[in-house]
Amino acid sequence: MITVASCLECNRDVSMDDEYFRTTIALRADVQDHPAAAEVYASAMRGLRRRGATGLAGELTRQSRYVEKRTASGIIAAHQGTLEVDLGRLDRVAERTVQGLFRHHYHSRLFPDYVVRSFSLCGLTGMTERVREKLLRTMRDLLSTPETDVGAGAFRYWRVVADDRPHVTSWLLLFFDRVSFLVFSVPRSEQRGSSTFDANVAELELACAEKARRTGMRD
Image (tube, rainbow, N blue to C red; front, side, top):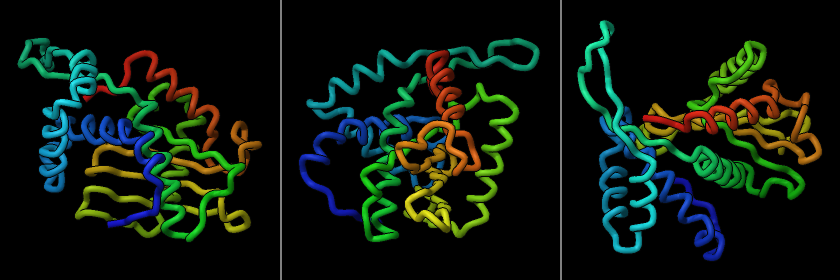
């Protein structure tokens, strides 16, 4: 287990996003059969049943609906529940995760004039071909680095750090082998249009925002 020191006030401010992240990922149909997901699913269910969790339970109920699953010939085979997820809340958790991992590996905080940007890969369908190629190249570079496995496959990540600027980083986070995020840290002055990264962060952000506006993340 990786632990990073954090103040009580900071934890309190983000605990709702953490619970939302844990619960929405645990509810994914493609995650529930993962060997490491059983306890996370049970914990999420206990959280939803707590008296103080009625707000989250109500929010998830409003975001859920049933859709028809059809065969190739158009016959309705089943009805499946779907959940439209707030990608921004998931990305915030991924960004804080990278901030903590950076401190864990390099024993310092990211410079205060740096920003961390996360992109849920399930939301990046509105990309141009050029941006898609840059994204794939970035992911190939990340996957060529050593993998860190936390919790028997519950969480894996890969990282690349710029040789000349150690606070310029790229990360690939993978939860339960299904849910992935591409995360960057970059000087605030270079947040848009930076040539430092292999991917164009500004265009990825726009693609992700457009996807979230249209449909949200659906299981």
